[in-house]
Image 1 (cartoon, rainbow, N blue to C red):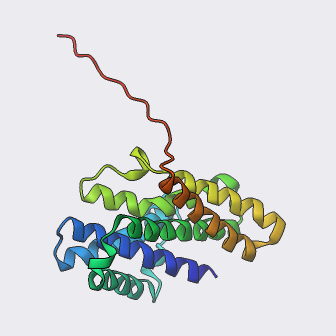
Image 2 (cartoon, rainbow, N blue to C red):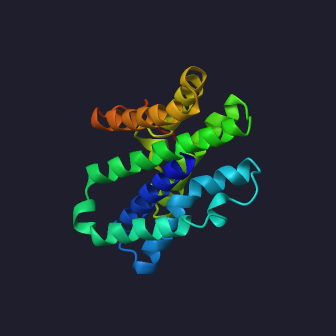
Length: 203
């Protein structure tokens, strides 16, 4: 199940990264690099911060192939995929898959709830955050959209459901739950409140 979720997350975020690269008029090499960074960034951040050793993306035999297929598909279908709604759906699929996959992995290791939620959040949003920074965009998780919050809520749902139904069912239900939260917040334009301040400069 975890390999399936990880593959879904890698595939979705590879497409997401490739789409942003094409929007920014990157060349072919840049498109594939951006796809890889978006797909692997969150997991690398998580493993580095939590001292998990060599990130799984560098030891997995299938990761690079999935990234290549995802980016190539985005290029091939670019006329259909360069659409805001399609982009958000794909990105939400990747967010949910990575968040719940990370939460499940941490639970299997016997980590506490804070580590589980941290891993879910960082793995889910890290790649997209790095992607946005690299193309000089404000990371969406800091400015608009219920994104990181969806990953954390999904992680909480996973922890709770594991105690009721077991890991297998909890993974599927919490993945769907995370995806639905992200999409509902986007469709209903639900965002966290912003606090604005204007600094006065006195000479």
